[in-house]
Image (tube, rainbow, N blue to C red):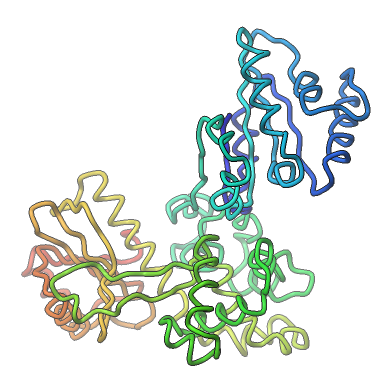
Length: 432
C-alpha cells in the first residue's frame, strides 16, 4: 500500500497512469460525498464494467469486485482518497484486511493518490492512527527543475524559458497552458489576464483549496510579494499580531507556498539577516505581485493594456529570483557530476544586511565557491564583481572559485580579469 501525493499541478495520477500501462489495473476517483453515497457511486462504476456487486456494498465487497484474479500483480489505484478517509473510519481497516487475508497468492499493489499535500503530511496519520503502519511507504512528487522545463520548451530561447519558469515553476500541468509559439507577454495576457483565461483565478484556487480565513493569507501573501520579507515588516504592514502571523505563515509553509529562508552559516553570521519569508510557488507569487493589488483594473482593462500598465516595467526585476534558482540548479547539476573544481557538500544563499551572495558552496575540507547571478542589469560591471567580493568579506569566506552568471554581457575589464584569474568564471545564458 503506497501513498503517492503531490501538488495538483504535478498531477500524481498521470504518473500512475504511465506506470500501469500494459498491466492489469482498476481505478477509482473518490468524491467529496457521504460514505454511503461513495460506496453507491463506486458500485455503479463497477457494474458498468460487468462486476457483480450489490448497490450498497461494503468496501471489502468493492475491493473483491475490483480485483479479479490474474497471473500478474494487480494494481488498484484510488485517487483523491482523502475524501474517503474523512468520512469512512473503516476504509483503511477493510483495505488492510483485504490485502492481508485475500491475496497471498495473487498480490495487489494499492496506490492511494492525492493532491491534498497538507492533509497527507499533517492529518492523515493522526486520522488513521496505528493503521498508518499498514502503509508501505509515502512517495512525494517534487517540483521539476528548470532542466525539464527547458526540454519541454526546447524550441524557445533560453530567455523565454527562464521567464516562463518564473511564472509556471516546475509544474508540468501549468507548462501545458503556455503556447510556445507566443511571446511571454501574449501568454500572460491569454491565460492570466483574460477573464476566460485558464489561469485567471488559479492562484486564488491554490491558496484557498486547503485554507480557511483566506483574507488573512491574502494579506500576508500580497505583502510578501511586494518585498516585505521579515516578520516585523509583515507585523507593521498588516497590523496582525506577531503570534498570529507566525501561525498563518506556518500553515503556508506546510502547504509549500511559502518558505523561511536562513542564510548560509558562516563566520560572518553577525552580518546576516536572521530569517526571511518568501513565496516559493511562482504562480502565486506572480499573482500577488502584479494582479491582486490591481484587481479593479484587471476587471476593467483589456488584458494587453493591463500588462503594459502594471507588469511590463516590473517584470524584468521579478524574474531575477527565478534566474538565480536556475543558475543554482546548474551549479548543483555540475557538482553532482563532479564537474566543478570545488566539490561542495552544502550549498545555500548568503543573505547579508547589505547584500546577498546567490550561493556559497562548502566542501568537506573547508574550501568554498561562491556565485552571483545578474538578470536585469544591462551590463555586468567590474564594480559588481568588486561588490560581490566585499560581500564575501562580510560573510568571512575566502572563495577558491567564483562563478558569475549574467543574462546580459560582461564589461571588458571583467572579461580581462577572468582571463588572468583562472578561478573566476563568467557564464552567460548559453552556458545554462
